[in-house]
Length: 436
Image 1: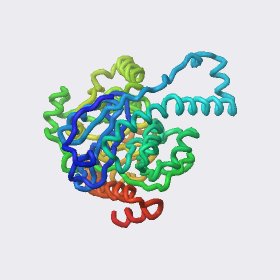
Image 2: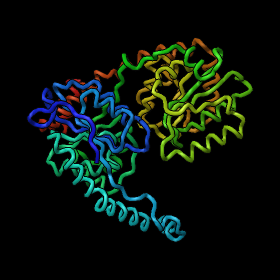
Image 3: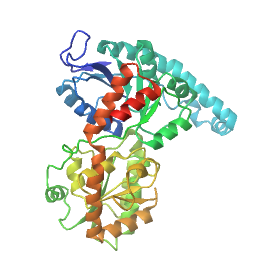
Image 4: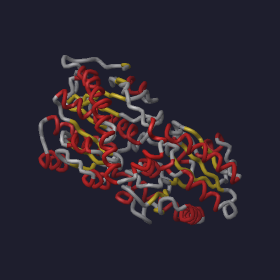
């Protein structure tokens, strides 16, 4: 357990000017910055500290830690001791066969979930409760869902404070998550699709509400011109550039864009692609296979893996088209609204929460997840029609206003204040929706 930073503390152990003390807990790992952390950072950036006093707990060091400390936000890094995902029986043929039997497999998964709860979750919750007690929290806000955050929900119970869980993915739930969900005051779902998924999965918090992520439209702006960015990346000024932004891992579907580029190599000889993002810990093998595929297809000079970048607005603005390629239902797709914010036409996948906020044919084009040929057709169509690209980009700039950070922050602050004040169920959600 390691502490870093801190702000001037008042008599309750929190920033003196604030009203509600909120512990922001972000448990992602993998040495990358994902949508959950990005959303939390945007929310923290817009908070009115007279209303909300944040105290951040991360489960690993992040590049943003120093920035948070500089903003006067107390940050603690919690060293969660996890059970190994692999065990001795994983390579046993008999074990694998037994898992395929319905009742037996369910029993084995239940037993592992119970063992994880007793051996990993409960000890972690006790340590976490001791860590966050110094913040004198009015509530604990879990930024990335039920799964993997059982310790935070239990810690809230230990401290006798309400817990708000922000569901941001289509997670799998065991009986442990279903049981603990009943101890959660509010589940904030990033999209309606996620709320439906949680309800179908047996989650039963005190209340549900949907709050789309926000984006600081004034801050998310390119600092350099497209020509300068292309020169840095050794791309010709007249090249046709498409790109995908996201951590390199299989479900993000970067391979789909690579295959679309391959299909267009003759028709679009000036077409290149940028794959922007760091390699997630779970994506190491996928990234290596992706590089091998580029070599095999002779595409190394057409497709660049740029690695993690801190100038994403610059890179997006230097693309002719921003592509979203997730091969399974994307919970939200933050990169889509980021591309809209810099005035780029977008091609996204038609799955998950994306169709809720993208108007197909009006402010973006949608394609079938995993279909490289369909993606290639859409790219070719847009590159061949400058007027269509301009129309989509203009509509996107208008649509993205719905995601203004001030709207998002006001809604989340009202939820925090309502939960801390003891509002529950329809009373809580109704009051907040009325204010929004």
